[in-house]
Length: 120
Image (cartoon, rainbow, N blue to C red; front, side, top):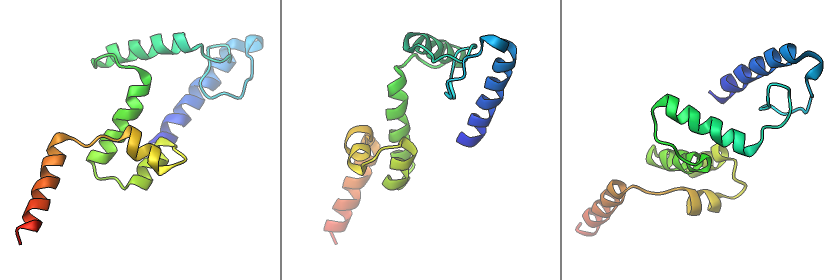
């Protein structure tokens, strides 16, 4: 999925490079302005907010998407090491202690399983 998205981005960047001609500044970056320069953070935030509006989802901070991804991976029972790789953390503790949240429903299920086990 990521490879497909990055290839699409590369095609878009190549098209922008051709359109910019001599104004293109080759920075080696994947995500750039139409002239190849780095994207200013405030411009990226505006673009992200616009994408949220277009998608019909509530506006969130970009970093919140990372936490959401971690929480979804936990809810899908993805192994913590895999989640760590997806999120590009260097330490598992960061993934598990900061980014992952366990839903209340999952907590209730875990406590019920524990109670069932103790009643045996």
